[in-house]
Length: 488
Image 1 (cartoon, rainbow, N blue to C red):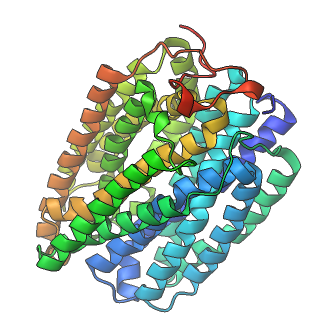
Image 2 (spheres, helix red, strand yellow; image 1 turned 60 degrees about the horizontal axis):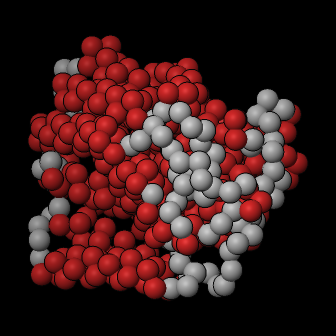
């Protein structure tokens, strides 16, 4: 471990590299959401293909995130982070050149592999290189500034899609200069860190079980939106069985991909449960919002892409501050209030219809949603990392990222069908709008449930039982503590 100070030149360099790196993955995700209607027209893709354009990326990302965290802990977090950036960028060029929906879906899957390598490394680097007093602020800055990429994506995508039919392709190419900057900053400022306690081979069996189980489950749930068939049920059972097998294998293997001992911490388990329901709500709603705005409300791609800009502005102002507030008063209150406020914002989106304007229909919901999200993200992320031993922050970050991604993956697969948005409804604005209203109310209920979970199970008193960073003990041999938390 190292002791980098956030306000130093090196600290700012580390923060810039991790924000830009993870921002690449966020940028492409949000660009694709806004561009879905145009991609559908350009590549003659229906609703199912558009779902897979999103889910192919999220599927490989989710299935391999734990592998990315494990490789970073073993081989070096900076090394795997940079490798992920290079891989992601090469796949982005493939996405830009895709001639058909099938090729685009395949390249999105390859892109997700690169994201799985770089995503857990960005947070693990922050937790492992900064001094304890600066970690919450660093995570808060990462959350807030990283939100810029989330906001730029829809705006940039909307502008380019609105200007030319090939505009969405250019956005993928923009990853090339971003990648060059990330690699340069990483080599100059990020010190190499790894888990010195990691031993044995990487758990390839666990990787195969997790990835194939998720693939089968998501394919079945996506196909079920068109009706349940015998083959769909069989695939669903196979997916659940493979994921159950993954958990059994993790409990028995000597060097597990996902050490189940991490979940011995009530704080870690509760934070991940909150992550699952909140991110399922966010991913499901934000997948459908650009479609609703363009196909029902008549917004241009630029207007739809710009609709959530206030979310980024609010997060830039509040996220780092909420990280510091949570460090001072404890995470329970912000993690309880934040999802409840975000749920109110999502519920307001049920008012968006064919007659809605931005100021009266979208902006109020976006502002309330933004305040709730700002209260939630930084305390939630910091809580997860603080609940893991210092030498396992890489895998802890990967687990939490995986929980968020799997939640989004399942939400995109299930929520449209659950809300009645079928391929037929997608092509009929009135039916699509009715389904969207149902979907955002379901998302609001999920988000509110996340606040309830935090109120019941998140503690402000994290145990400070972890030994110093250079003498950390194995989590599997003892209850999980919070190595960096100061008594409150």
